[in-house]
Image 1 (cartoon, rainbow, N blue to C red):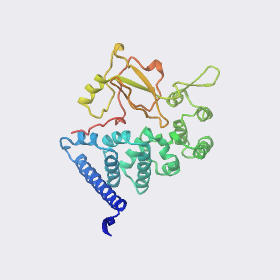
Image 2: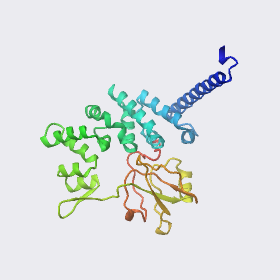
Image 3: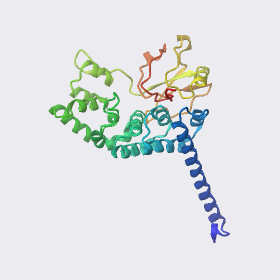
Image 4: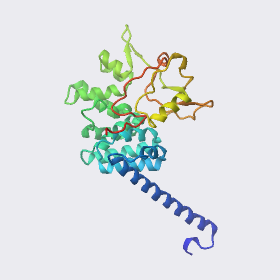
Length: 305
């Protein structure tokens, strides 16, 4: 019978499917409304607050809509969204970005490729030969970021290009440096500034020494400091202001397998700030403010009025 008849199991299945369809439609409507609001100038009041409060399905659909439209200048919110999404969602968005970019220039796809390369570079491992040909973000300093998780086959191909001096040798070298693997960096006979960029220094005997610990450190700020900052910038576009040594972080925590903080904040009102770059313990305090890249990967940068 329709709607499962008198069988309670079938009725429950039909009701569950109906609720799922309703939830998906609600997410799509919310995502489209937010996408339209983000494209408006000026952006309607409350849009960013609603974006911050949105869950993953809505955020994923906003990114997908931005990719479909190829929206230029969307990096100010795409970076903040990608920072909040789980690895599985980032892998799906990486595939979408490569597909849309393969169809021609797409600024939104370029932005997503850069942002996902920071959060989960392994999402692009299978697409690196395609990205080599497409050359997204080719004039930007982050053009080679997708190669941070290059596999053995791609590394061998790039080494052949770089060492044979073939066309693209300089670019291949930059991609290889992004792998930050000591065995690869050593084969490139990297210059001092290249070693520093890759996280190494050369010892007097010629061996390479890491500048950072193997796992990232995560700063734990007193909750009051973060609350004050969040009140001014819900999704930050730069680091908190300098703190005196007396207000140094109370604790640090290691990253999970994805390179991102996977554990819940500890008790006692201390929250953790995720970071992708390794930080040596001696660099933990005192804190100093620094300029962010062109967009904050852990926060939104609002467009100019």
